[in-house]
Length: 130
Image (cartoon, rainbow, N blue to C red; front, side, top):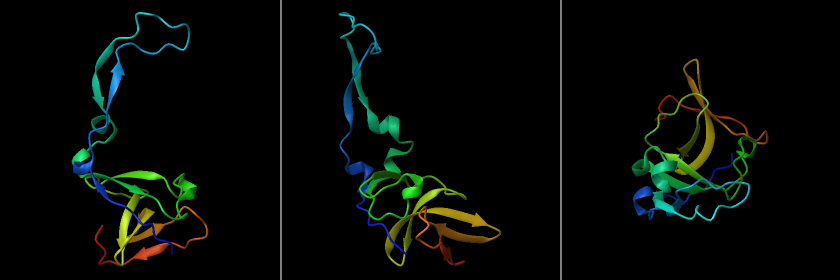
């Protein structure tokens, strides 16, 4: 089974992603000379993440999730405050190694599924913390 190597960056260590926001929509037609006023800066962290304090970013290594559109080198955001359910894509720790897989919960069983047919599912034992 391929495991993903994640580089954890806690949200508290991220500097705010504040960018200028123009007050007027940007038309796709002819420009208007009056449309150069700016609104106050916009903090992207607050708009992109439901729970910024419990969110971290990680870089993907490996190809086990390419079927879900997650490719090597991609940057993912992981929110530890959300509760995983059947079908959720999760970051799991298996034998001390991080991996990104789809969680499956059915009939009292739990397993991790890759989104690449080259990788077999990994059943989780009842002692696993979900």
